[in-house]
Amino acid sequence: MPPPPKFDWEAAREHIYRLYITNGQTIEEVRQSLQEYWQIPSTQVPAPRTIRRYLKKWGYKVEDQEPVTKAATEATRRLNAGIIYDDTDLVEEIASLRKEGLQSPEMLQRLRSSGWSDLSMSQLTKLRHQNGLLLRTPAGQEEAAIEKARKIVKEQLESGVSSRYGLVYATSSAKLTSDTFLPRVAVKRVLEEIDLAGIDYRAQE
Image (cartoon, rainbow, N blue to C red; front, side, top):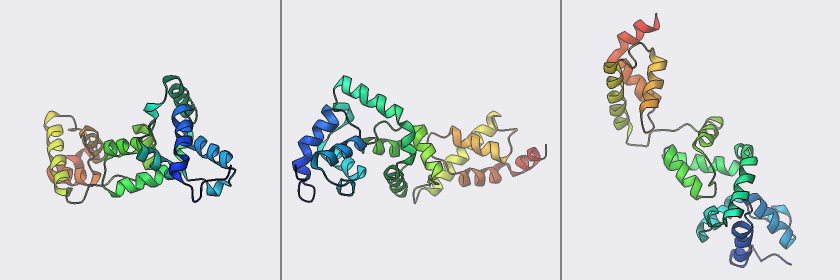
């Protein structure tokens, strides 16, 4: 069967529904099926990112699959979990969301709704670190981040939680305590402002 001219997405929509929702195929399996169905070279098959965009546009979600099909799909995804670290489309999407200033929870939500429904927070964190996509404080919120760091550092010093920590441990403790992203530079600045003498003393112990 000849392929739709310039890949007619509406002509392919019903077929993609059967592949993704009825048969429970993964994005890569959908690509392979489209290639075989229309007998076209792989270079003419839509990229995974493009397919995900249309799945989102049409409202096709993994949650819509039949229970048995969904279970089989999830099992396949768990089996191929390691492949996710080589997904260049995913890395590009993470980089794009980082530029928007999104923090990890919002980033994960957006990624899951964009076709990576089985992505976990630990996988997202590992992908960011592997590709140097460290989080940043959104523009205009630097002072708010410093104030939050100041509050946490004071509470930990007063409670004794970080009273014996040097700069590295005290910084890590404050970042872990925060329920939102807290830049290391903000914590370091506050620690040096509030407890510089104590940090210097403990560093010598």
